[in-house]
Image 1: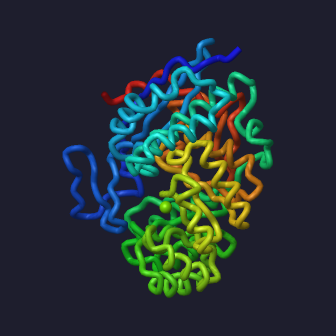
Image 2: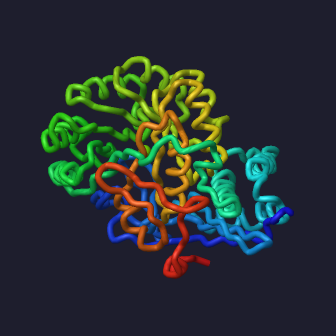
Length: 388
Ligand code: MG
């Protein structure tokens, strides 16, 4: 008998932060009336709150699945798309048809030109919730449904070193190394004395054995990026992320073939269709899919495509309450080409208080949650942060 989906409930969330994501605001940066500001270093809009959209799907038998969509800006818009457009297309469906449901939803707005952006973000959380439901109905974790657990625990790199000066940020990095971590990523957007000075300070603080990654935030032309990466290499740079504008596929490919450092891209991409031309042009050695943009179905597809191109997978970790993170670990555990997972300590550690899960990050590794499905349940106190 089919245990059909009978409801889809949406909870857009906004949890205030003590300190903005990526650290203190630069002098002169204004926060607007809706709580948004633009970091001049990467021209990108951020919120003063941790925002996302929680998705609850319920079946006829009363089983519940949880998902979470990207909602860093205007999460209420994502929730409205899910409520008005997606829910009527999902109710009545068999949760075991999750991949078909994903494909049907993706098709639904192609004619309008929506094959990315808010539309696919809205699909992502619903897809995740249906996978979670499917796991609970079968009693199996998602990695089993995908074909098996390849990794017992997931190695991580520590992402973001908040601090006012480069010395402060390097000291934050050193503290993580002292706690058993072995890889760090710094953000060019907040390196106020330049990437080279930042790299030098961090290398001096952490010693020669630590892997240091840099996020260049799409900031440079191809030639500028190549020159910069060569200079950073004098301090043994492990990986350069997002060196040129996302739209510049040719420039990206030029960087990847001109440096000996690994180049990574992909946090802003949502489907195999967005990744495909970049694989064909050999734009990167490593991809960084973001679960909150992709959902489980597309993340798995993207990971398989990366395998076909002998690229490694280093999943991105966006702002989320933990369901996205756990879903990303579930798929990561099943990927043979997984390298490391990003660990956003300033988000993950704090938001763990809002969910029931055995998932943890310590000593350089994520441990996967126990239990069927994704393995994370929101606690009652999380619902205090639902916005209308
Ligand atoms: Mg990034």
